[in-house]
Amino acid sequence: MSTEDDARSIAASILAQSKIISTPNNNSARPSFIYEEVNEKTGDVKVYIDCAQYANYLQNYHSIVYFNKTLFIYDHGLHFYRAQTNEIETHIRNTCINWNVTTKLPSVLLEMKAHITSMGCYTEYPFNCSTDTIPVENGVVKIDYETSTTSLLSHGPTHMFTYKLQVKYKPEIRNCFVIPLLNRMVDREFVKTLIQIPAQALLQMQTGHAYKKAYLLQGEPHAGKTSYLKLLYAIFGADFTTAISLQHLCTDRFVGGNLEGKLLNIYDDLEDVALEVIDQFKTLTGDCRHGIERKFQPKYTGKVTAVHIFTCNYPPEYPEKVERDAAFWTRWEYVKFPYEYGVNPNFYTEWYTEERLSSFLNLILSTMITIKKRGLIANSDIQEVMNNWSINSDPMYGFIDWLFEPNVGKKTNHYSKKKLYDIYITWCIDNKIPEHKRKTTMKSFTIALQSHHILPDCKTDNKVKYETYSSSSFVARFGTGIDLNFKESLD
Image (cartoon, rainbow, N blue to C red; front, side, top):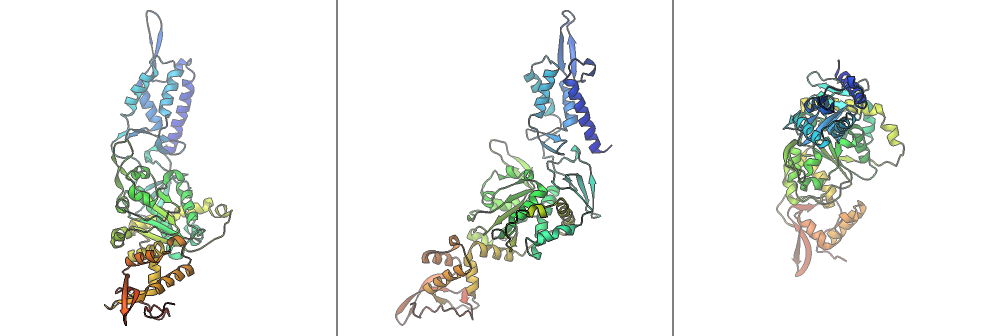
């Protein structure tokens, strides 16, 4: 008999048993854990519960797991474990009422709790430990990483999952059926990154091994970033994802409790608020075992495998020390969404069909096999990631790169202070830099340039003093036709 048949059999028996319990006069069908004692002198009958037997009865149906002072039960309708929401206490109460149990309900509840919490008790996090299976709508997909094949098993409590993907496994649907959808979102070079994200999330949940990658999706409004996130939600479901901002991830010591058991941390439209510290982010992405802290609860070691995805129009700025932190930049894939689309109210109906979602699942499964054998399929150069992030978070990087090039000599170059600022303002307008990203005063412009090794200075020529910017790191690009000569008239 399959695990699914076992579950149906247990469900049928519990249904039958519940009908018996609701009919207390049917003594022949009384459950084994209910017994009577008759007073020989008075003839009074008292009804009692054998709590040990009753606990076994509940355990057989609910497959109860007790961990971290929480009772988990297997939900035969949802096909995964979840924290019980008073189902056990309700069943005990109804049993006591239906069978006119003599013992007071608080006493029964107290004794039953002692029995139940001593059954299926775990000191280590017991869920989602399978290294080769994934629960989906129509069963549990088993991946044979050696032979690169997949098969479908029945649902059941023995798999010990606390999640289930919202997609059906249909091996007959070709992987490539979903590619046109992904091609609408990003350039071809980034399609593999969009596939890697869910594959990494499932592998980290399976293996407990951190692949040390987070993802920043950058693009203008209506570029398809949210459409990609909705594709992930269609596969993973909102219940098994969370939404914590990058800034919050870096500073809140309680985030581990919100991340535990989640497959993805998806935060749409990240605010352009500068990062202050990054150490906690590196810790969370560097390993899957972490100390879990929740307010007013004891700390314990748990499993945090969620992959972090953030979307933004412009990435947040970062502390100057981060520029030299290779460990931070290796943690990121920077994905550009370069297109812009009009609003199509029928887009999701037309594109997010059951067949295309199943195709995406098949593509994810094949990518998991590839990653397990060869490593990540998208692993960008850290200098490229840093440049993309820097230019888009602080337009000053783009302006300097447009106007200057590295100085190969030791000569210090001087440029007109006012001319350079005027050129900067014109560049911002031409490149549609948002107002809040511009340095709108000469003072703020001067301060920003100093971090790029372009310093305020003055130059005297023929006893005339000129306000300038000086730099030995940069020289104006040849052939731009832009006049930065400090000695010429500024009028």
